[in-house]
Length: 386
Image (cartoon, rainbow, N blue to C red; front, side, top):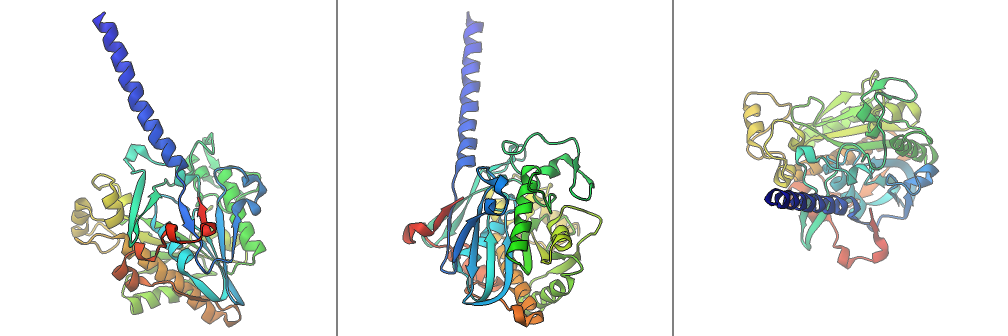
């Protein structure tokens, strides 16, 4: 009798634990991030308007257009291709909530892999959320994963055969929106996402596309701009400028011609748009770190990485200050602005004049949250849940 009671109690406890976990993951998947359309936003669309088969799926997401008073060049800003690299969306929201354009057009997709932003990585102990402090309180964000959720795209193939080059990639790459470019309208869900982005570039005649990322401090392709040959000159001048004038390190990496599916490769090969991919260091993603906490995500401080830095095992400067979010977001802001500036100088007939976006030093001084508007004090019609 005692054994039977014990089994029942154990079963009840296990079910209670599983139920609590299920509630947490359900809440994470269905949490709606309020995205505020700032004064520069003139139009809001959905990604499914450029690929009908996305309508009604978890991959559909908002697109924001900021159209200047005068015609000029057009920039597409893509954030959260990898939703475990949150400096991307934090940067995109600074542009979205503050930027105004006198000339040209800026198109922003703040949650490019919307499914990935609703996924997580419990095996690595990822936090479900993180908060950014602001003058009016804190702004809560979902912490996502690199790949789309298997709840939205399943099953994975044994091997992902890239379209159209037929290069063999990892089975997980079929859910990675930086491996599925240029995509197909009838392909797997993430191919439809990248196809829709390609259609934006073609239909809107986008001149430059900037894909924002973060990479490990132990990975050589970090703290840099990745660009193919058609974009390399502008990338190089922009990198040299921020190094010399804004005081932070940045270099250029050439896009490899033999590795398919990447935004900085396929956008250039399959459209007239000039692609750039930005990488800023994110210690959270390095393997030899302590627990994957919110503090590590935000301040980038880790004792193990500090020891590795002393042994010259990292590819970026690293000391007791870590790599705080302000530094990463500030770098992205400055590099994006400088790429647009250098494109404008090289193409005066397609000038892009943008104002009210902070640069590196300002973000370091004020913090990221300083640039976010209080949802309680803006027109509700300007708030979009994603």
